[in-house]
Length: 397
Image (cartoon, rainbow, N blue to C red; front, side):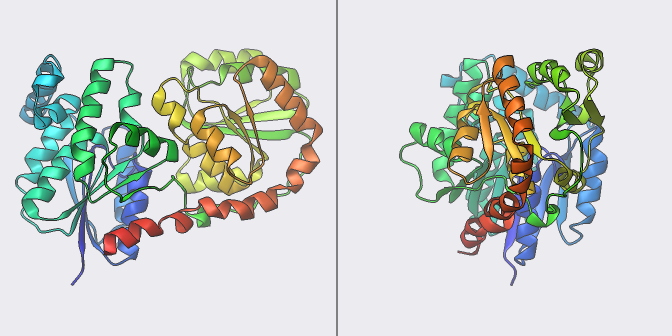
């Protein structure tokens, strides 16, 4: 008889690649799978429908993230609004969860009507943690929690940070396992929850190595640098790089992949002529595209504690593609790079250091290109195939 896993998320497959990888892993290991997710308006809806077709034997339970049905939306929104007005120290954990995410209420309401039996319930995103815990208790199944970010550190509001920490202190020790997306995120959580289960482990956001191809030896007069995200906008650390790039028009091309926002459009096209914009790409297409570049750029400033501890997907994708990595300093990135055998340079996000780094890259262009094949082969240690065994071992026990 097949073991059954219920995955729960406050987002969907398109906006939660980590969940998508776990779902594929479960299917490959012959688990019967169900996913409770949300229908999100916008770009992700079409992408999510495409992804669902890849899992024809998976059952999908979908809730609306929009105002339809109106009464569900109104009640969940009012609950969240009113509960945030209450001091968190006076609230039980159920109300605490509802105050942090209206989707927690919607998930709880749906799960209360779900009668199927599962061996595992696995929650992604904090808005699903409490609901998954209650479901696991009521249905006598095991509980797994995935902590992709240091969630108390995502807020600039100390009241919300304290609420999130209190929720995690209650739920995480009750899980049969917790997986973390970065070692420093796990260490930070352990500081606040010292009496945690021994079955806590880190699974970084590695991608399937089959999505990458060996770096291409393309003859180009210019040094090709890439940066990608869903959106190209201000506040992503690009401003100083864009400003300095204009000084190297004969030597460097900077390629930006993502949806271009108007707040940065004038800066791009008024100051620099060696910056090329590409529309957003699907993950596989993007990973194949990386092989045509030499350097991957990581610029996002560590604007909060989570950003300081996390390992961005960019840095892992660049490593798997065999690119030299030019990264703005943050604790999570610094640890990932310094403990690896990758080719990289860590800098501050100021114009002087950026300028010095670009001069170094130009001067060592050939040497960097010659190391790409070795870097590509080494980075298989970060691939999803190399790091997912702890999950399958845990699910099968």
